[in-house]
Amino acid sequence: MIWFIIAVFLMLGIPWLAVTFSGMNGMAICFILFFAVNPLFSIFSGILAGNDVKKLWVLPIDTAGLFILGVWIFFDIGEPAFLLYGSAYLVIGIIAMLINGFIKRRK
Image 1 (cartoon, rainbow, N blue to C red):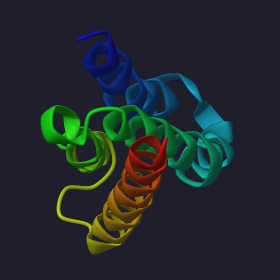
Image 2: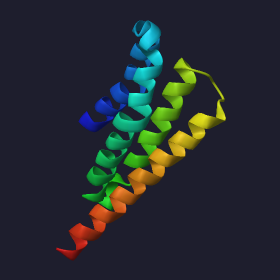
Image 3: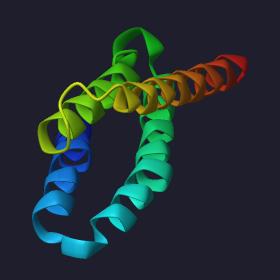
């Protein structure tokens, strides 16, 4: 539950803050979000899901879905470039989940 609150804040709250309060710095904040914060959170959610893949496999999907929901609400609905970013975050999260699950299984 704590993960979901953090995910909602990062994927919905921060884009809203960027659009609402950033002014001229909005593009810089979006670059930081799209290329640093969101991929790192996708890796984190994948690692967390890798601890118990059978129960938590949905975390990387939720992360990517919340990202797409957030950017479509606050930026431009239906923009296909955001689907590319969301897909990349999904792949990053799934790879992190599989690697962590593999490492846990080997121990």
